[in-house]
Image (cartoon, rainbow, N blue to C red; front, side, top):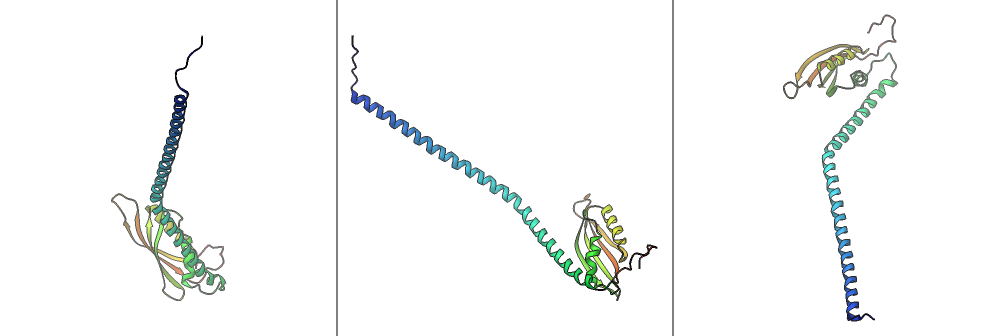
Length: 195
C-alpha cells in the first residue's frame, strides 16, 4: 500500500523558505551581537588603558622634569669644569670650577641638594653654601665626612638642621658652609697633609 501525502508541495517549499529565512536572521543577529560585544570589549580595554595612563602620567612627567634638570646640571658642570681642566695645575681654579669636584664627593643616595651658592671670599678661598634634604642624620654625617676628605676643602660647618614633614618623620633640611681653596692641591705628598 502506498502512503498518501496530503501536504501540498507549495506549502513544503514555503516552510523550507521560512526555515532558511529564520537561519539567516539568526546568523545576522549573532553577527551583530558579536560585533557589539567586540566593540564593548575594545572600549573597555581603551578605558582601562586611559585610566592607567592617567595614573602614571604624573610620575612620567616628574621623571622627565628630573631628567631634564639632571641634563642641565651635567651640562653646567661640564661647562664649569672645562676651563679648569685646561689651566695649569699651579694656577688658581675659578670657584665655579670647584663645584663639580666638591659635589661629586657627596653620597649618591639619601641626600638631595636643593641649592648651592658659591662665593669667592679671598684670592685663594671660596665659600660654598649647600642646602638640601637628607633622610637621616647618619647620611648627613657621612656627607660631612666625605666633604672633609676632599683635598680642596679646608672646613665644613653645619649651619642648621630642621626636621621636615610630619612629626616623627626622619627627613630633615640642612644647610652647610664649605670652605674651599681655589688653588689646586699639590701632587700627593707622602705625609698625607692637605694645603
